[in-house]
Image 1 (spheres, rainbow, N blue to C red):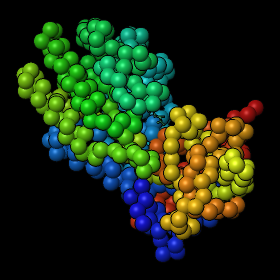
Image 2 (spheres, protein in one colour):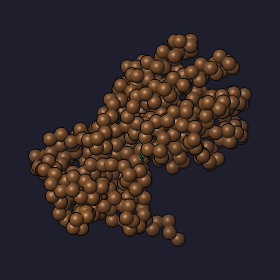
Image 3 (spheres, helix red, strand yellow):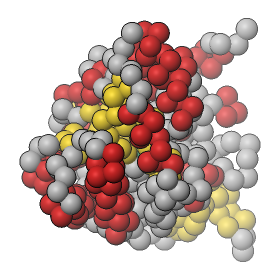
Amino acid sequence: MEFIMSCLSVGDSGNLSIGGCDVAGLAEQYGTPAYIMDEDKIRENCRVYNRAMEEYYNGNGIVLYASKALSCKYIYRIMKEENMGIDVVSGGELYTALSAFFPAEKIYFHGNNKTADELKMALESGVGRIVVDNIFELETLEELAEKLDRTVDIMFRIKPGIDAHTHSFIRTGQIDSKFGVALETGEAEEIVVKADSMERINVVGVHCHIGSQIFELEPFELAAEKMMNFIADIKEKYGIELSELNLGGGYGIKYTENDSPINYDKYIQAVSKVVTGISEARGIKLPYIVMEPGRSITAETGITVYRVGAVKEIPGVRTYISVDGGMGDNPRYILYESEYEALRVNSPADAKTMTATIAGKCCESGDILIKDAKLPAIKPGDLIAVLATGAYNYSMASNYNRIPRPPIVMVSGGESRLAVKRESYDDIIANDL
Ligand code: LLP
């Protein structure tokens, strides 16, 4: 039996197995709900990207893991061991990475409204690059660098004016976006020239990220083309050399049978052709290439296991299966109406005879994990696994209704260990005075 995630199989017990570990056994050991992730698969995904960087850019670049997809100390340790860089977007992510001894020089600091305190923390810890979003940030940074007697290597976040076909909440490359400076209005050119005249600022390059969960090649090629031409224009017009090009992340993953992601290798190969082509045509040096995949590193390595409580059949309307988690651990349905697939943990390959909506336990009608899921018969007490929850689930989880966040269990080589403990009720009241 093939599942949409390659790390899943049916084990000898007849139960679902992830990375060689029995999911029912893990649920017994760690409780439910629980995020369970295949560490070996995470590492393999990093290697696919690093190999592609070698192959298509002769290693002249770096792959950053966009850690907003899943941020915890354990994952930063993996990224360090796999020779990845990381992208962080807040003081909290930066702090977590540094506390896991992630090398500061391989950290790129993003965000459309970094506070002065966050910028100070970034400078003092020696992060590799600050990806500056706007003029206000640039000026704040120059002042701070002056005060701290430092110079800062920066890139600019640029909106290349590309409308990628994805949910409007995760689309970022178009002009009407809160992120970055626009190309076509001349804003990008202006800010680069201004920064070039600043004493404490070293403009290393430019960055773009057009959106997330994108399945087509074209928007990536187009973005690369626009960015390369921008680099060439700036060189021609002002003699300013931008030596680094960060092309962001955004590669789509398979949440359900209906998703058909392109092999990541293909995207990278196609984009590298555009980059080298323009570099030759316009006579500019090949820039140092930066990529920032997040979702495609972790999403398909994780599942969330829940215990079923009530099964409520509303005759002629719908059947609800209620589980012991919900929008607190996976807010993606309520935010984007995202689609997922689920499996019954015991005998997952049995015929799917039931259509039911998997609902969470929060006091909120929209607290749904999957609408009209197709499953084998489900009864109270069964275990259900929702698939491909390894990205933007734990990292976006909340304590709504004061429900503790689930643990993250990592499996590797048939063994399991905790990466993040389950929250306790005491954790929940820890800051209450
Ligand atoms: N680089 C930048 C600057 C980004 O803003 C993002 C994602 C990435 C890289 C990584 O993109 P990825 O490879 O993961 O698609 N919460 C939403 C996704 C928000 C993405 C935000 N930026 C979701 O659950 O779908």
